[in-house]
Length: 287
Image (cartoon, rainbow, N blue to C red; front, side, top):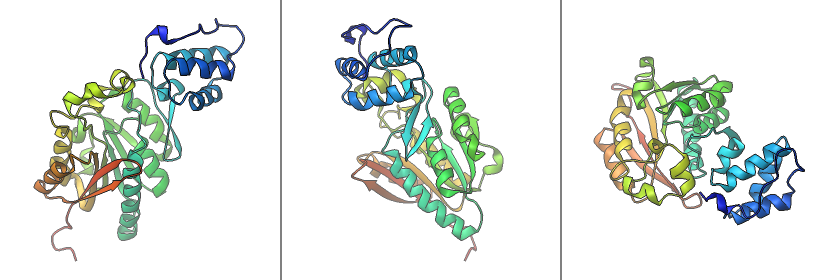
């Protein structure tokens, strides 16, 4: 949440003074309205390398910056993902999409006998691609985003997996050699309707890029563009996975069907997640 400077009920120590105690950190965060003040305090205390750094981090968090931007990472599917300021923070609900993609990737590898070609579109920090690369072991991995800050962040996260990260608008960013070769296309597109962006928590709407949140009038503008372009890029039998909301799922399914993809909807009550999976049919003449 975002709070004015007055939210700090007590002044933080000046540089070079004694380090903040755990109790002082908790008190400051709680006064600023942080619901999980104790848990956040533990993360800040374990991440800060010096007393001055801790004081600065506590102040930034108390003033409303997302915790992940303050500590520099987010936990996602059991992994630490680097998240720079100004980059979309991966949501826990997206772990459901990743789990579905892992299962499809393993079946693809078993069917084809080769590493699957995976593209993380609208990649943000590259969290989805990072986890997929680790879970699938051997992949040919690519990612793309329109935000320069996201591209820089994703390159650091995907470098250990040998992933290529490209900057640009959706498919325009991808190398032409990927046309017709992608086995798994995961696209965590923005799907918040424009008029509802203002209802998001302040730490999202004030510190994350609008392009990663605003999905247009009904929230499905980017999804429609992705489903329209996907058939040209997917391999025969390839899959497109897109996150959406439960109420938007019927319209999303229509977009998949209209573009020749066989859709199915999957959801998780636990993670409050809904995704649509579209499959391109096999090549003509394939058995």
